[in-house]
Amino acid sequence: MGETAKLIIGVDAGTSVIKAVAFDLAGRQIATSAVRNTYVMGADGAATQDLARTWADCATALRGLADKVENLARRTAAVAITGQGDGTWLVGADNAPVGDAWLWLDARAAPTVTRLAAGATERARFESTGTGLNTCQQGTQMAHMHTHHPELLDRAEAALHCKDWLFLNMTGVRATDPSEASFTFGDFRTRQYNDTVIDALGLSGRRHLLPEIIDGTQSTFPLTADAAKATGLLAGTPVSLGYVDMVMTALGAGVYTGDTGAACSTIGSTGVHMRAVTSGDVHLNAQGTGYVICLPAPDRVTQVQTNMAATLNIDWALSMARDLLGEFGSAPSHGDLVKHLDRWLDSAPPGQILYHPYISEAGERGPFVNADARASLIGLNAGHRFPDIIRAIVEGLALATRDCYAAMGAMPSELRLTGGAARSPGLRRILAGALNVPVRVSARDEAGAAGCAMMAAVAIGAYPDMDTCIGEWTTPLLGTPEPPDAPLVATYDSLFQTYSTTRTALPPIWGSLAAQRSVKGASA
Picture (cartoon, rainbow, N blue to C red):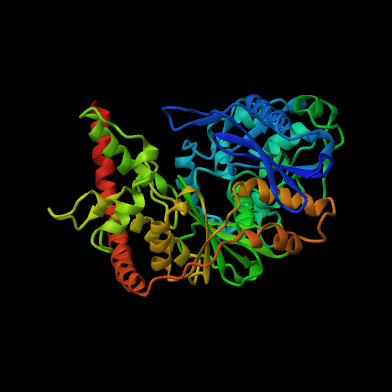
């Protein structure tokens, strides 16, 4: 590729890593620069991140990309930004931070979520946003601040999200995108703020903090001189504000390619399960859980359910094995153990043990919300060995994925996979069998950065619309469909019924155990 060919930079600001990725206008990935960022966990459930440092880390990642790409600044046709969703990033006078950001991991709003969920207007709020209440969201966090920390909101002039904060530093514009605006404070059908939702959260008096909504496929803003100096890019470079990282990752991985019924799951530390539908085809479950998040395509949204923990369950089992071996002086690395995963899966018969993958100390959020939920193994006998446990855990992840898609309506017709676990053939076979659908893996390495870069490509006129861009950037990178195995389908159909029955019976036990932990903690 010539040293003058135009490029688009996609910035994906995750919870712990900020990546800057260069793509050519045809969607080929050229280079990546990554910088670890940090957040702080507090004993009171707080999870916070320094705004100034996050911007500095983003600028460092962009300068690092210039070290890998010849003439990056002059070749950059546009920059696009996405980032971790939810959370509350407050800015005040002169766009200065109002304290540290409350991240999506922050649990301090839990009592406010309980109070709001019991309100008379909660169902109306849910039917507008399509999104269940949880402690992750900016709306519930701001409602909690309004009651318990009003001084924070009093000092603020705008409530932003992570990507919005980076966009502000690049352009000087306070704004958010249609996806986060509508699932937090609005209506996914109109992609605008909604008074009923804002009133239900008790935030009518704080509405002035909600920024302008802009669509990064339709408009860009020039990089400021200060941002150019910080990043090494040229002042005036077009900057596109992407949608939230969940849909950017799904878009880059193939959640929407024009195929009816396709879905996308990211099997990473957490599990994110998404299906693309028209706004009129959204299925709002009776439990009031999940998200509805707009896609950067006309009248297309994603229904989303998210597991609090996915591969964290596997990590737990492998960590126990490593700790035990370490007692005898020989502790393999996590990577060494992962290499054995498929061999263990192949050596254990399917459907022998039932596992509920609620290993997170925060409980579960999809397709049900219960902070007391915990993992369980059911059906063990003296003949079971470590491979049987590993297989049960992976089967539990697959059944939890099915549970999430069932809450969104009918099963998808095809499942596209992203995340590190998608590299496991055994895991893919189990997922295909549990959902009874073909599975395809996207070869896209940096799907989140690609998703927002695609938006910028449309905004600058490199493509006439998102569908055309998807046809070149996404569809060709989807692997060959891997069909489900009929015997596994039959096994997992039966196992899922048991999984569902026990899942609905366990909450009293979870509650009892939580009470015991609370008593023990109080007496310690």
